[in-house]
Image 1 (cartoon, rainbow, N blue to C red):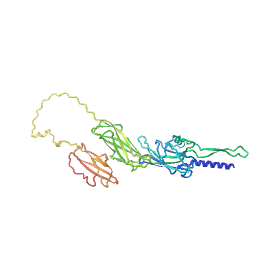
Image 2 (cartoon, rainbow, N blue to C red):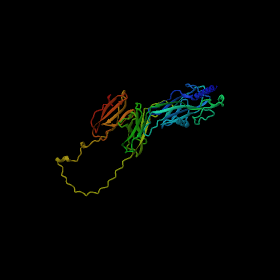
Image 3 (cartoon, rainbow, N blue to C red):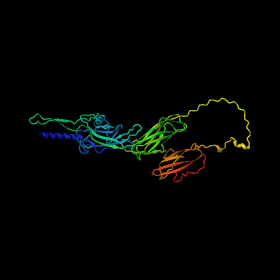
Image 4 (cartoon, rainbow, N blue to C red):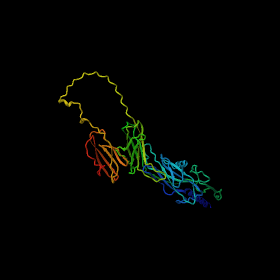
Length: 473
């Protein structure tokens, strides 16, 4: 008889334990991905109610409950924004996060926990929903977040019994309700032992189901590389150094387009390139890419300190997520100072020299006319004033992806303006002659094309560059 009652008590306890481990579970394993190459990491968690085997009606004896959801992520990552497809609103719960930090810690990781608003429950109706958690990847100083992004997700519930307040913190240590009975007496001995048996499921289960995973990530950070504020006079160019740091494996999808601006300085133009003159770049594995912002100051610029902004942006993409589009660009700033050079101090007036007796010069003869001070036009030197923009030529079936332009062997910046690639050719102060502009283009099809234009200074005669031909750039 004793053995039969003990076995019955054990079965009741096992049933209660099974019920407490049910309640909710993952309907499929959580998944994660990074948005738009360098964007946020999104963890998608599908959840359903269960009575013990697969997704099913919960079988609870209550009509209201809350969903508990928690994430363990790399330290330094901020708490995510949560969006549920069933409209449930989740709020953070520090008590649950603290409990998990104590019971399931990991070096270099932190827990964030959330509890939903109260949801109506039909014990005989299965429920299912999905939650997206959007995690921004923070930089570490001037370095981007370095993956992989490892995570653990747990899901649980709280039953709202006895008028429990849905806004109160969840206590993950609450035990199941129990009842006590006295066992049968031992023959010839004292009364039987007191037997404690669960009588229902736990009102709280903070970790009914769990899963882990990782995401390989990419990151980009831009920063200034100048030691201090650079200075330039109106009408001159200031080259401001920057650096782009990329974390992750190289991918063709990470093709960053460069641009820049100087807010508050009308007429200033900014051309941002790599150090070899490219207006875009695809970084290699965990690469550091030096950049230069070429700032052309207008002649009428007002003296003062201005901010130069440099941006590396990916092509525009659209991601259909409730949490919104991912960031697709990174920016950095540096200061420049516009200052007119100080006028040179006037030299003190010299004392007048005593008048010298006029020298008698012999009248020039026919034989010494070569000593005349008359300067002929041929004796004057030429300094070119040519400064102009060239537009690279694209044709049907020959779209240009990027290009490099060298003027007399010196690389110049190539930018895209109005949908076309352009470059500035500066031949000012060059002597009289013919100068070559070599253009090397990389086509969208993957091919490469080279074309040389020639320009002349100081009226040097020359022919056409034959820009109407099919092979011209």
